Each structure stands twice: as structure tokens, then as C-alpha cells.
Length: 102
Image 1 (cartoon, rainbow, N blue to C red):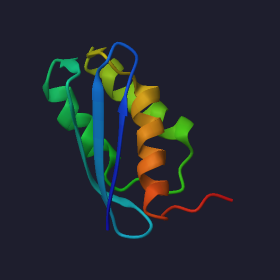
Image 2: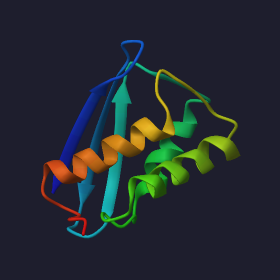
Image 3: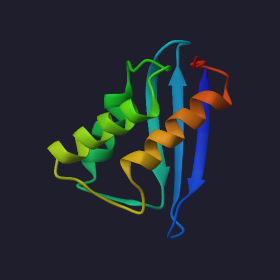
Image 4: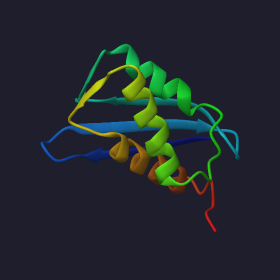
């Protein structure tokens, strides 16, 4: 199943997220929008790091995972943050009724 979420963040940048999941884990993720991320290949690293993640993971776990990637690659996020991406992940999962949280 494919789930989507988007958000216009402070500064007017649009961040869009599309997730594919198998009912329990993220299969793949695609992040697009008019933000900047340097180096650009860090975006693929973030997307790839989400594959296999449990849909019920808390927002803080998604944020920590993304922060680890940006730190290890010395990536600079302009117009968005790990917390914004984590919020979008949780929102996308909820939008299609997956990853019910208790």
C-alpha cells in the first residue's frame, strides 16, 4: 500500500513524502519538494534507511534515524529538518490506516 503526506513548512518550503509498506514495515520511501539537502546523495541515504522500519515506530525513532544519517554524511538540510520528516512519516502512515499505535 502507498501512503502520502505533505507539509508547507516555515519559510514556504514544500516537503512531500510517499511511502510504500507491506502492512508492518516500510518497503520504500520517496521524499520530494522544494527544499535543499547538501550533499544531495544524503537524500537517497535517508530514503534507503527507512526501508524495513516498523510502521509502529514512534516519531522520535524516525527523527533519530534521519538525524544519524545527516550527521554521518555531514548533510545540511535547508528548509526542513529530521523532525519535519519524522512527522510526515507518521502522518503518511496514519493517512492509510497502517501502523496503529497503542
